[in-house]
Length: 308
View 1 (cartoon, rainbow, N blue to C red):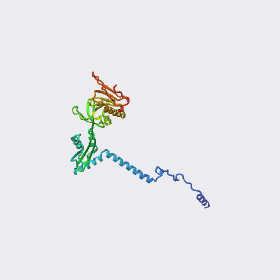
View 2: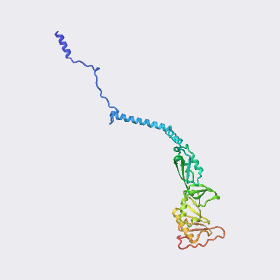
View 3: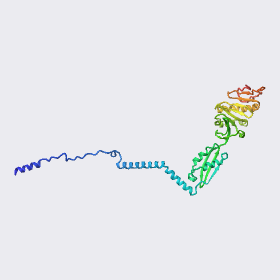
View 4: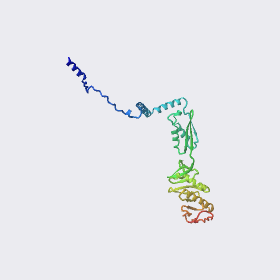
């Protein structure tokens, strides 16, 4: 009896061995990428969703644009507006004198659709500007059914002779039309490569000597540097290079002609290219002589010899 009690006592007192297999240890969870951000995870998820939705919308719009869906929708709406009574019925032209009106009508009516919203104003204007005479063009709609074309034409300033061809040009050198030899207008003639680009300079040059302007027949652009002016009486005046130098030389020549009547006296060429010198050349025909040119003392031509 006593032995059984002692055995029982010792068994209760002995600590119960615990198996490592049944032991459960709580591991610490590693922080994820969202937990590492300084924002709440829910906010990050919401922003990511909106970004993804925006990307889907952008892709959808790109696909729709590639398939020309907006253009087709716009065209359909424009056609419906045209069928409702807002279609081009007439074209009104303003300011056209040299440009053929029939050509303007052809361009204005050449539209992919006559519905007013679908008329391509920019393309119509661009096609009108291809005419040499047209300096500016404005195309507008006048609702409900009129297309207005307002033309600003260029003004002819000279005739350009190049490669045995005659062309009418404006002050900017733009070719306006071809000129026939038997129907030349009363305009100065500029000759030589790129002379048309300097027509405005030549116009300003002749304005500096208005008393000579009615006697000027034309001019040749020499070497891309200077002018040789030809008068109606047959003489040629060689001017120096440079805008200011040529203007001063022409003014001096005008004063000399007013004082000594240089033009119309049988001389052939006047050369003022060398500063301070006035060189005169006579005809090579037998019997030609140098006329007695009396330069007045008041004529502002320093060191100008009477004849050379």
